[in-house]
Length: 236
Image (cartoon, rainbow, N blue to C red):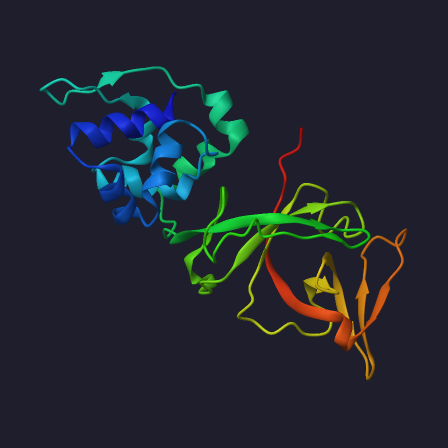
């Protein structure tokens, strides 16, 4: 099923602009447009909110095709159950039909890549807080307007974080010894490690024993933000 087309047709049939729909479900107008053009991976919580706004269960959303006619009798279409199961959407549909409480979601900007190995160059793409070319979903109770996401490169944090995973950092929260963190070193480099602090040094330790720990003076570290969420890269 073309989910983007489904959202587009429902929106136009009900005379709702992309901005209005975005305001209703808590995302930007551009994000709705990207969904409708199938340029963002399906977020089931967001789709559930869209379906609910149009008075549809997720089961009906995926089993009925919207159209632009004057009557609202939906045309039936087949469901690829194998595809829904493999993508995890089938479980989400089943949960949505049961007694599972809905989770409020927000989107977090992915601003760069971070090394899980030796420190590597970091850039936020010169985006202001909250803006980026790519966004990932996160629970709304994260409650940090400056939260940002980074994609892991390297294997020093494996198996906790793997190459290609996305980690979400919260600048609002204080990093403590033993936390997984992203640290910015000497104004130019970033790395993802486990944080340890002694009387004189900041120690950034890998999970993978094949990699050495990195030791820095406090003045060498620009910032350290805790990792609060990890989103696994899908296996290929």
